[in-house]
Length: 299
Image (cartoon, rainbow, N blue to C red; front, side, top):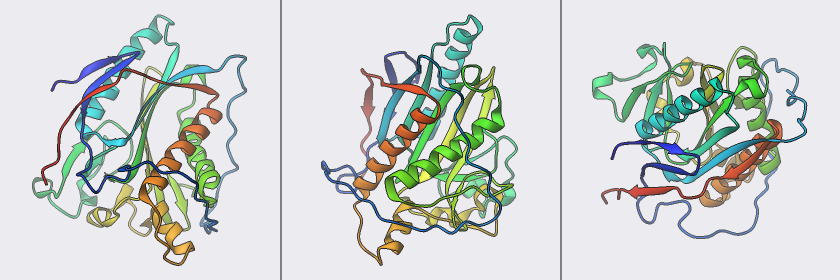
């Protein structure tokens, strides 16, 4: 099915659900989970960033909530680019009145940044265990897969702060605040490296690209992710540090207590969008009318 550029009230692409019995959202969940975790800081850290001065009226941000869906990477990437193209045309005429936020999960896939090197792959691309995509974001190779919350903000910096470095550091700050708020996890930045860390484990990767002041791509937060595929790469080109997930951190802090995957994913999503909206002074509006042609995963 060809991808169509989404209008302000609809999106068109295929979404792939988990196989029956494995979906973390298979049934409604209630209640809350809050476990205190003291994450050791490692390396120099910057002072917490502050959002730009609050405007009289918050800028609108259209939010596509697909955090319970597996969306093929190529289709999500094409969807982003179609939005960036449309938003760029609106910005040129001074009519870009709304930012965009897409939240989803991907089937297993490796992505490399624009100048990403294959030396960080522990396999030949032609024999890759999963799809491999070279894309326009900055940075080296990373992995996306089920249980990882991926968020693609498409933001016009002219209406925030025209500074890509500030924006990158701001996304890190949003993640740090969300982890503390939802899970009492003490995360940090590490000087000279991009992403968010708990001790020496990277729990969130960030990669962005800008076009006409509109930035896209975004962040990937390991919530309940199977971390095994990271062993097939040097994540972000870093060889001497590990990768972690919220679930592993909480299980360790609770001495092996089993934690519900669906609850963790929902908590992470709601905390992330709350902190994102507050930091960037945005009014999030969930877009109605999204329809999908669902593909079943063979059993």
